[in-house]
Length: 323
Image 1 (cartoon, helix red, strand yellow):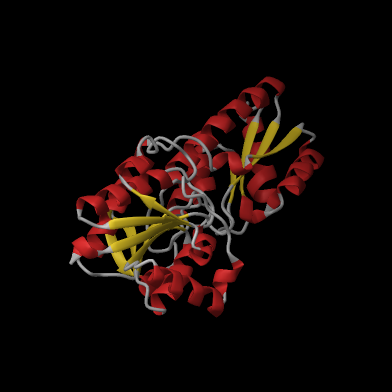
Image 2 (tube, rainbow, N blue to C red):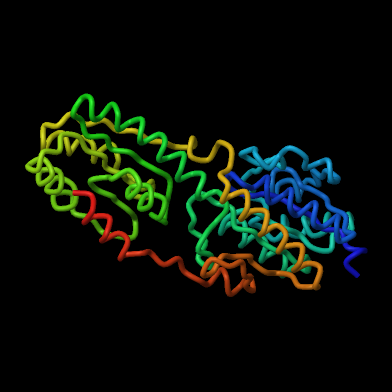
């Protein structure tokens, strides 16, 4: 019976705005369903070390508007070993945990799959600013990160325009360029460099800058995804090729912080509620996702096998409207 269940919850990997909203939703929906909730601090490390806090309605008061995660997060190499997973399983059994809710990214989900195979079912909520979960159109934290990037780049634009400079800006996204693409469109970037699309420095950057110069443009924004890994070299080469004063900015972890946007608060809340619904009906080892704008869930093995599609049509459009 749902009323006899005890569920655990943790946040793992990089923090993302909206994780607290998801925690809040899980805790309150679970209590509404007669369940007990235990929170594990510092992700899988907390699961191994039994760093547990007992959660109630007031444990999650006043957190929906806060960035980061009240349960903290950490990387845990030990959980990648059979011994680490066995310790985590033993702790779950000792604490009477029936199922776990894991909020994080692809690596966190692989950990959840391993724990599920050891007999502790898990339900996963995507929380990553890269929006790189293959099975889901959207991940908690993505909207806030984009809006943060836009705000910072708009400020950089003021200086670039005043000094007739080129500003090369690196945004997050190791293997997924969606954050760079959407941010680039929103700030009117002259060039957008992403991992999914091969780029030619001369054609995709220099030639575009020279063309727009001829039409009267005097300042430039170049957006580079983190996974490209050449932002310093790109800035130097732009100056060498064009003699335009060029500055490089890495936005870095500022993109992770801050109060979550309306979209992230709502999506996180709805996904948290869906996680408890899944547990209530006796299911486990599922990943919650957004498909065609609706909340769905997939078997975890199926979810992990799915690949993130890159929107080439959007990318092509971005190039056409940013000259």
